[in-house]
Structure formats: C-alpha cells, structure tokens
Image (tube, rainbow, N blue to C red; front, top):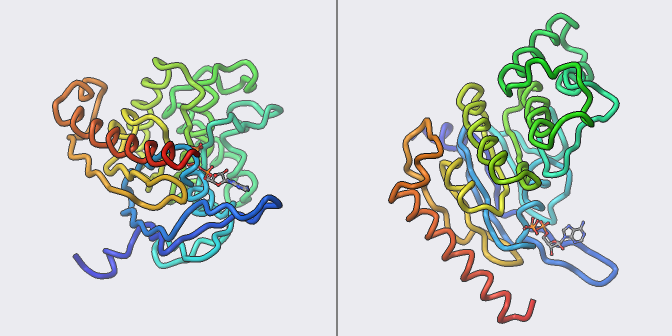
Length: 267
Ligand SMILES: Nc1ncnc2c1ncn2[C@@H]1O[C@H](COP(=O)(O)OP(=O)(O)OP(=O)(O)O)[C@@H](O)[C@H]1O
C-alpha cells in the first residue's frame, strides 16, 4: 500500500498515561500503539480499569496524555474538535432542548450553515436513527434507547471524521441493546466514519467491529488484535455462526487470562 495511505486514519503512537493523585500515581496506560484505518470500526475490550476510557478520552482531547502522540490523517489531535464526535454511556443530552434542537446543537454553534441547511441535516439524521415523529419531544419523555439514538445523531450531524463511543449501550436492556447495535451498523454503513468503541460486551464487540482490540490488565496496552472476518452487512443471525463463536471464545479467553492476573495480584 502507498506509504501515505497507510498512514491515513488514526495513529496512536507510544501513548502513555499516569494520573497523579493525592494518594499516589496511577499508571493507567503503558506505551500503547494502534493504527485505526479510515472508516474502520474498532472495538476496545479489556478488564475493568485497564485504561479503555482513558485512551478514548485522550483521542477525544478530553484528557492529556503523559507521553506519546495521537494523529489523524497527519494532523495531531490535542484538544476537543468538531473532527471527533463522542457518545458516552450516560445520557448527555441537553434536557432543555428538544430532540431536533439537540441534534442541531453543534451545527448551530459552528455558525457555518443557514437555519434552513441545519434543518435539512437534522431531518436527515432524525430519519437515519428512526426518530421521525419524536423530533419535537424533550429528552425526559424518551426511553434510554431513544436518548442514545439522539446522542448518536447529534454526534453524526457535525460530520466528524472519528466517532468515539464509550459503552453507549451499557445502560440499556439486552433487547434494546441488540436493536441499537443493528441500528449503529446501519447508520455507519450509510454514513461511514472511523469508529473506536469501548465496550464490556464481547458479543457486541465481535458483532460490530472490523477488529477487536483486547487490552491487557492495568496498566493497559494492546494484548492482541482479533481480525473479524465476517461479511457485511451483518445481522443478528451471524451470532450463531461457527466463526462468530470462535472469535467470541478467543476474546473471552484473553480477557479471562487478564482478569486472573489481576486476581493473583490481589487487585
Ligand atoms: N481522573 C482520574 N484520576 C485518577 N485516576 C483515574 C482517573 N480516571 C481514571 N483513573 C484510573 O485509571 C485507570 C484506568 O481507568 P479507565 O476508566 O480508563 O479504565 P477502563 O478500562 O475504562 O475501566 P472500566 O472498564 O471500569 O470503565 C483506573 O485505575 C482508574 O481508576
């Protein structure tokens, strides 16, 4: 592959994070390297506290790394920017704004588009995440799954190059979660982005991602990368295939090994 193209996408280079707290230093992430291709979907898995969220927050410019560099398409990412959209587990919608106002919030702030253009973009995302008929409602009258759909639409409406998802379906019941996974795949297929998603759910990671990155226990680093060679578009039926089960088992084994290490260390 052309050297320049190879470098395109997200490059995480020698990233390390130590939190300095009053009770001492917490080594959250040891030198971590990862390359995520443009429009690739990567899922991060690992034991609790291995630094998954820390890594995501550093990519998003919300937490400063102790050392190392994060580059997207040859530009260094150092602070929050419109290029990076984020969705967290906790519903983070503005309660005083309607669904459509929440989705259009970032566009309005940027002041680059007319109200009519914003209206059109918002409408497009209302349809994409299946919220037609709910656009005038306020977050408090929506279910958890619907609120996360608004959050995803809000992040995408800004047309970011990278979408960071931190356990976005963690608070949802199993069925809603599965439906949201399919919706996310559908949205990603129609509006492809470079996605990095943190999840605790092995099945979710294998179902969604092109590659599953399993991290070692704290201080985290990349333990193994599993290439998920499953046809797209995917639907839930793929979960019963032999290949799917093998990928899932491999990820489980790795996480188990890392959890056992933590237990032996008495953490
Ligand atoms: N702001 C902070 N100050 C001090 N320590 C922190 C801070 N944020 C995270 N940590 C610590 O850094 C380590 C990694 O935390 P992080 O939340 O990144 O892990 P995680 O893999 O996302 O965990 P989980 O799966 O439980 O959400 C943990 O030991 C955590 O306690």
